[in-house]
Amino acid sequence: MTIEKHAHTIANIRRGQVWTGNLNPRRGQEVGKVRPVLVIQGDWLSAAQNRTVVVLPLTSDIRKAREPLRITLPARDALREDSQVMVDQPRTLDRRRLGPEPLAELTAAEMLKVEESLLAVMGITNTRYFFDRSMTENT
Image (cartoon, rainbow, N blue to C red; front, top):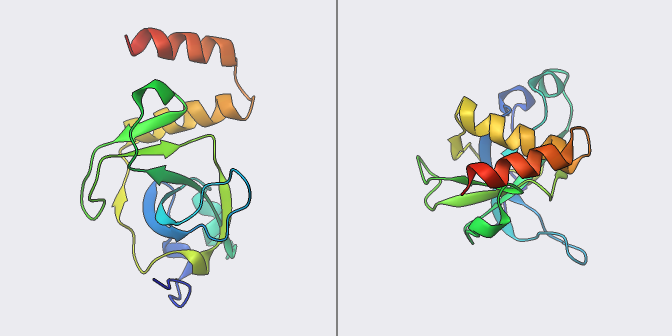
């Protein structure tokens, strides 16, 4: 499947949307394949005509033990399978690597979980507090 030929208006790619993204070629332990990705960059970057998009890949290989590094999303709209956002695998893609239209959009509550996990992954928050609290909530 070739998705690079789709020309997107940069401004119509919004934070919280799930698109199909081409993550090939991959190197080493990077996530590859054509798969759903969550747009996490600020909408102001799209409005500024930024030609790249910061995303988090999704997987349909649900592993509850990987939470809170993976945020589980139920299937909806064109996202056909339950999936997990791989928060520990951020990527920057050229917008031409995205499919023709968004598959789904996360709720505000789902985005908050992604943001909290991403802050912990990036070392911007108290990681011990985050993981201790998340493990308590998941039991």
